[in-house]
Every structure is written in structure tokens, then in C-alpha cells.
Image 1: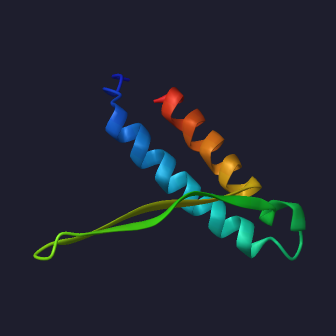
Image 2: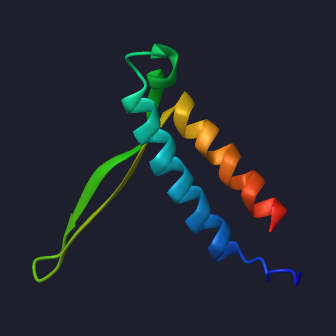
Length: 82
């Protein structure tokens, strides 16, 4: 079986997909396993730069919980197995 060329872009896409699925599973299973929904929100609040003709708003917020971290590790495992 030929090896797949691993790139940084593939890793980033897999980690984003894993975090989305991990967060969804954490929300769905939070009634049964409440520790999966425990987490924190980290990031930068939106900042606006107003240059009259152009208004630029930048910000990044990550909502991390236990299920999201599990999703990260699962996708990292899949990436390393490719």
C-alpha cells in the first residue's frame, strides 16, 4: 500500500474536523457523561480597526473541552497512521 504524502495542510484540516466532531459528541453525551462538556474558552476578543474606507475586525476564540481534546488526539492518531 503506497504511503500518502503528509502535509501540514492535511494535519490542520484533520485537527479542525476532529475538534468539530469532538465538540458535537461532547454536547450530545454531556447528559450521560457530564465531564466531557467541561472546558474553557480561550482567545482574543474582536478588535476593530477603522480606517474610514476600510473597517477591519480581527478576533479568534477557541472553545476547548475534554471531548474536543479527545477529538484532537484521535485525528492526530489517524494522521500518524496514514
